Image (tube, rainbow, N blue to C red; front, side, top):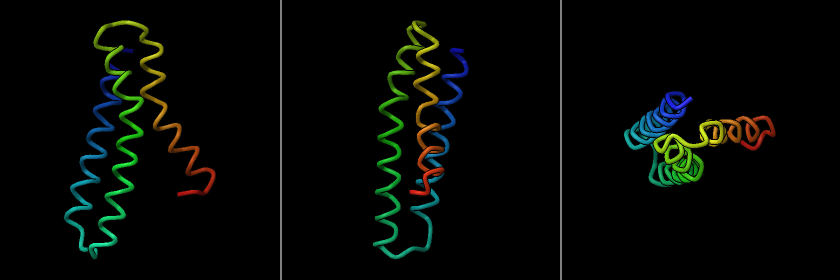
Length: 87
């Protein structure tokens, strides 16, 4: 489970890093780029709220079930928001 937490958090970092780089390099006007980067910042912050405690628990090798659950919360939140049609 510890490796799964690390893999999930690495996947989040790669996903957001790639999205940030592609947004910065996209041919958008300033307002569109700013709005996209704002949404990415909110997503990164929301993910960090759950991923950082999950990483702390996984590194200290405590409560690995909670760590795995915390690391999966951002993905579940994204699926719920998409299912509701908000995004």
